[in-house]
Structures are given as C-alpha cells and as structure tokens.
Length: 399
Image (cartoon, rainbow, N blue to C red; front, top):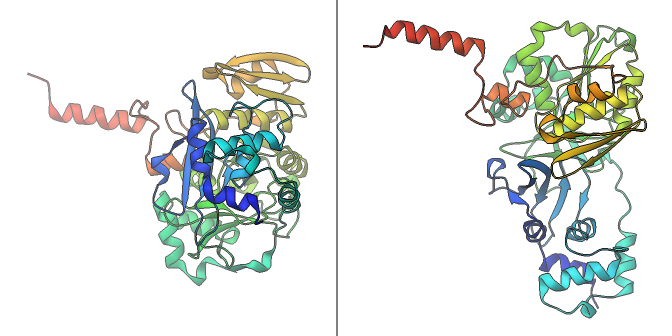
C-alpha cells in the first residue's frame, strides 16, 4: 500500500477546498504563474488571504496564510477548516477522511489507515532555516535583474540605493522558482545572524525563504548613525518591505531618518516580534504604517497593545470585532476598527504613533507610490485640488 496522503493530495487541490469555503481568486495578484492568491470576504471585509503554490513535476500544492505565514498541504488546510466544512467535535482523523471522501466520491473506509496517519504526523517536524540552500549576492551582482523587479512596484533607484545595504539577490537551489528574487534578510533585534528572508520576484511572486523565523525576527533597517538602540525615536512597522520603502520614498522628508528604524513583519505579526523589537529600542515609539484593510487595522491595534504592555484577545465577528484588553471587554463595529477608536476604550495604549498611516482610499503605502487606489472614490490630495482648480480657471467661465 502506498502513502494514502500522497494519493489524497494528488486527487484534491487546495483551490477546490478553498472554493468550497467561499474563497475567491484574486485576479489582481495574477492567475498564470506558479502562485495563486485566494481571498475570503465576509460582510464586505476581507477575512483571510491564502497563497497557493501550484505543484509542478508531480509535486502537490502547498499554501500559506498572508496573515500568519502558517500553511502546509491540502491535508493541513482541511484539518484547520473542519468546522467550516461542517465537522465539529474533536476534529479527529475520521472527520478529515470524511471530507476527502466527499471530494473524491470514495467511501471513508478507503482512507483510514493508521500507519499512513503515523507516517504523515512524523513528517510534520518544522523545517529549520538552512542558509546553505540559497545563493545570495549583493544587488550590484545583477543590478538589471533587481531593477526589473522593484520598478514594477513604483520604487525609484534613489530609494533602492538608500536601502541597498539591507537587500540581497537570492536564488533557492531547491525551489522550482529559479529566477533571482529581491531578498530582505530577517534578523532578531541586536543580532547579525540572518534567520530568513522576505522574498519578492518578477510579477506577483512573493513569499518567504523556507524555514524563515517569523516569530522573533523581521526585516529591520536601523538608520541610526552608530547603531545604538537608545538613539532610535521611531520604529516604523509595515506589512512588507515594499511598503516600508514606499513610505520612505514619499515621506522621509517629514521625519529625521537618523532617529528611525524600519521594520517589515512580512505580512504577519507575532507578539514576540513586536515585544522583542520595542524592548530593544526602548526609547522609541512604534509607528503604525500597516494596511488600511481590516487585517492591517488589527495589526496596528495589536502593535499598540504589545508596545504598551497590554494583554489583548481579539475575536472577529460578522459585524464587529470583540476585544478583551487587560480584562476590559468591548466591541467595535467593523467600520471603526482602528487604533484611534481602540485607544478611546484603552487609554493606556500610548506607545504608538499614527502619523504615517497610509492615506485613506489606498490599501497600503506601495499602492500610494504606484497610484492604485482601492476605489475611484478617493478624496483628492491638495495637489490634485490645486490642479483641478487651475484647469477650471484656464478654461474660463462656462457659457
């Protein structure tokens, strides 16, 4: 008997299960490459995003959540969504096999092999970060390849030159994706050892190097002159390295960069990431530069709580989000889930600055530099208002 789980993974795709759960393909992220992005919405708000790596040469699909970085195979996806698929209780293997029986039209008894279950469980050990599997070069080794990637995102050569000491070109020798990627090294605060990479490639390719430590490490760009953590006054947090660089490109003239530290959490947020960084930069405030969607606003609230030493539990509902902050329980409607409203209920959340949130109407700072609003109904900037006024005056009075 072969491994029954390999057989299941060849018969049922993650996309099939995700579609059953109500996920839809995000066409803006592309549909023809090796990666597919699917989003789940409820009440008009995005609840989750998964990125599916399409299997090649006989390999099975895999996925990860944009919000947490956790993922795996279609087996993992079914296990984490058993209740949404209609199975309650202990969520054991019988329920897993029942789900697959419905997708394959085969009876559950065909799948229930204890030996296969034990084999699959033994393979679930977490893969550590192995730097020897990657070929890593400075941007100067292939500037044309680097420029081809970052100019797609509206970033200028001047911006890249500023951040170049903290960016590499990388190829993964064990991946089917063999084009060079921009790689943003992950380090723990105050340490030089690289423990992973945030990756961006041509088109819509994005992800993390295998085994990346996203729990206590992040992409940390310390621009203080001597690297003394006590010199830092602002730590700018965003969801991606692109957002950080776009923020710098548009806003660096409004703050002293010699007092700034920039951090990308890589599309997820771990309490130990934030607490470790803010503990290291003990005299700085956290600056919320996260996205304007619901997940981004919750990242901002979580960062405010962690930086201020507040124990926080969050529960998402269909029409609101419930919070328990140091024992104080309250709810915010989805339209008011933001750090400003949160601090009205929890005034102690004070070690946070909201001066550099993305402008309203844009999802994130990278969309700002690319000129991609979330909708056409975007409040015009003062410069657009001036241009419109000048145009009306030049056309003269209406007749």
